[in-house]
Image (tube, rainbow, N blue to C red; front, side):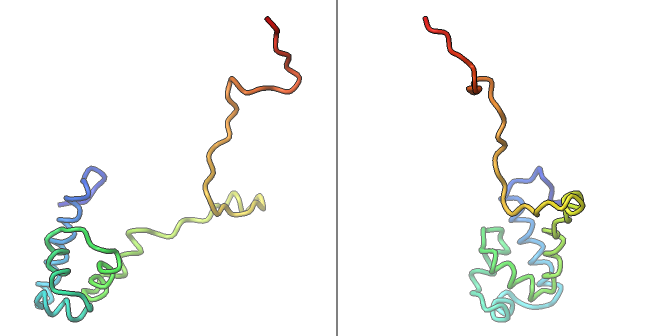
Length: 116
């Protein structure tokens, strides 16, 4: 199964667990051997392979052990620098802020209200 934007979390977790299981079997190691190598419990390995939610740190330990941790860089690549900001000598943004758009009901200086 190809993982895409159209998959829900449950199906993605199931597919990831299935792929981890396939790699483990191809390495000819049991779940208990993988658990021992990763420093995790057998139950954690079994639940991960069955598609249950797991902690990110557990997933990283498993990926390290089966030789796939370098693929994390593909999962979340480094952001590309904002070259326009570099050329304009702007500071690099460190947080997101909401847009401050002027609304139609905003008060304007010098505008008089009519008295009824």
